[in-house]
Length: 214
Image 1 (tube, rainbow, N blue to C red):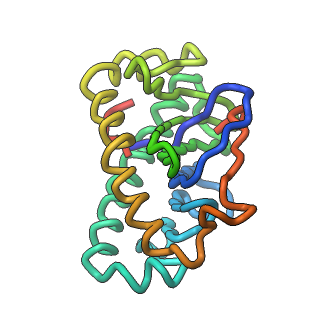
Image 2 (image 1 turned 180 degrees about the vertical axis):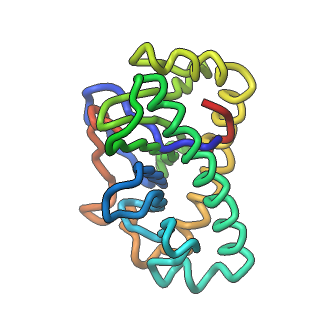
C-alpha cells in the first residue's frame, strides 16, 4: 500500500533551489472532512489537488493545466486512487498496532525531492506520521527505513530491501525528472534563480508513492 509523505530530520537550515513535494492525508470517519486528500506542490506553489469526495486529480495553476493533457490527469488520478485504497487499509493497520478500535485518527505521508540548480545536487525524502507524531521515514543514504516508535517496526522490517530501493529510485530519479519538467512549465511564475526570493530556506527540523503493505 502507498502511504503518506515523509519527515525531515535535523536542525540546520538548508538552501535549495527547487523542490517538489506531495502530501497524502488520511482520516478516519466521523468528521466533516474528506477521508483522503492529496496535494502536490512545486516550490511551495500548489499545482495539484485530489480528495475522496471529488475522486479526480485537478490542476491548481495554469502552468500545469496548459502543459499536460487528459492522459496525464487520468494517469495521476489512477495512481492517487490506488494510494487512497491502500491508505484506508494502512490507517486501520496502524490503529491496530496502537490497540485503537475507534476515534478520530490521521495518517500522513510527505514525500518529494529537491534540486540544487547550481551544483546539480539532488535529495529526496519520504516520511509518515500518525496522529501528529513521527511514525516512519526513509533514510536515503542507507536505503532503509527508520522507525521512531515500536509500532512501526513491523512496517520497517517489511519495507527494508526491495521496497526501500524502489522508493529511493523514485525519489532520486523519476521525481527529479518531473521536478525539472514542472520548473520548465512554470518558469515565469515559480521563483527563479537570480531573484532575491529564489533560493528557498527549509528548516529540516520540520516534522513532516510507495506501494507496499504496512
